[in-house]
Image (cartoon, rainbow, N blue to C red):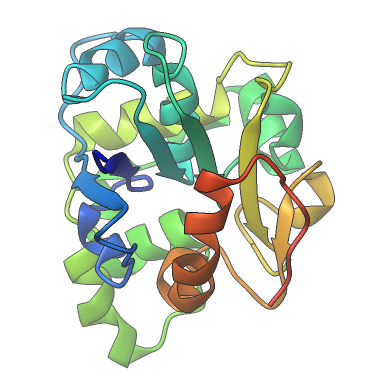
Length: 227
């Protein structure tokens, strides 16, 4: 029996190293890693998603996306047939965005975010992960946050805030931490809640994911699970 292809898409500015602890049974699954590339000038997220699907080399893959990567894999699934779409620490529609992002949309405040300052790992980590940083984590985040190009950051931030989807796609499996500071759980509907998990649960709760992802991929049931 052929293995199930699982494609992993990291979050805003992050590289696939954020998945370094994700291990799925090798007899059943084969993992492939997707990476961000620079957008074209004024490229829509729909067109970017179509370009990203060219990296998919298998039929009916499982797409797993984290944060902004979760938004992207939902857009990719409009272009290709998928076995499952799983999002982690993300949103299923713009209705799940926090109030500060909705205000940024209405006031266009996102246009004045000094993204050139986000080349600082500490500043970018706070923006991308919503974490209270301590010194020992900085080297860790420097490894994870490798896409620091201003053009990409401007594009990514704008496309999170201006995402047009108002109706969640059917059959999205949504895993979310109840301590997520970037996308607070109070705005999230119909998710599998991981207790005590922050926005970087893909790193801090990898054991939970390693245990539960195979079942979520293979089963049709989407029962709520907790740590």
